[in-house]
Length: 362
Ligand code: F6P
Image 1 (cartoon, rainbow, N blue to C red):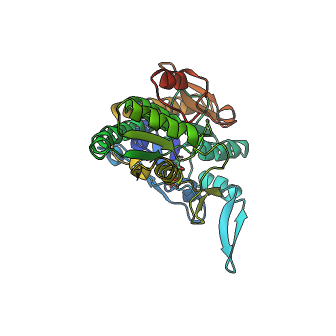
Image 2: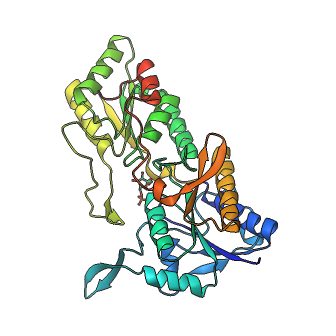
Image 3: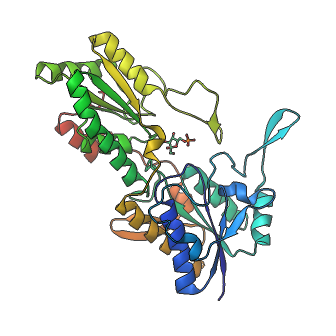
């Protein structure tokens, strides 16, 4: 049966999105002879005048190693709570019926939504409102449930690990404490895995509210043992036991979610004051999201794309593709967005870190 499938990428970008798009197009065209259209800028492309383009084999040629997404993305345009300006005021309205109508007018049979928690929650609601949806999990934070890992995460851990390797030599030369702030709003996966791979001395994650005394004691212990520098990795969502997550001063938000940032500076200032040592802060920011995907993410993204097309072929909608062990499987989208995948404070990774003498701020 001839079909038209649509694909969009929503939320923050991450390495591997183009691998997914390429795999969806190649598998839909080569295996099934279907037509694929790409919706531009996430769900924004289905609001108002639709933004879309044909995706044939030529359109996806050469994109496998490219970071970002050729379709564009947005982490502001939630159609269930869409910002419209009226008389200088911004109101949030539900434009999902317009999204469904635009999707139908494009003649598409199914929509593959590639995104994180926010995008997949929207996908689940649209599925309930009559749009045949398939979800593909994406986020460098690796905080989505029901999949062992999301694509993009492996690349981000690689970027941070390389940065930690580079920071070691300069920290040692100047006998400084380097505080490296990495992404991870709610989950400390990037911080703990890159901290382990990059030999951090202290790792602070949102799942373990930190005690500044424990952090400073760890630095002092290192000094007593002859190490005159230390590397601290702090996830942006880490926060002191007696405090709260640190927000950016500017009022900018994503889908009404406040932007985090500043924990690195806070920790560095406290260490400098309490221990009278020189500290420096490195905020890796969007460097972790940009650039070429690792081989692992290229392969995972490709396998996810192929499985999503397979689900459309079997008309198995409302499902999200996922990795379990070495296998790509599918799960209910609703199950994947019920809560987040967090680092277990008493689990294998935190245990390994502490066994290696890494302090976790407790
Ligand atoms: O969800 C991934 C993430 O990288 C978070 O860790 C971070 O808080 C957020 O995206 C930043 O998003 P933006 O692109 O809006 O700055």
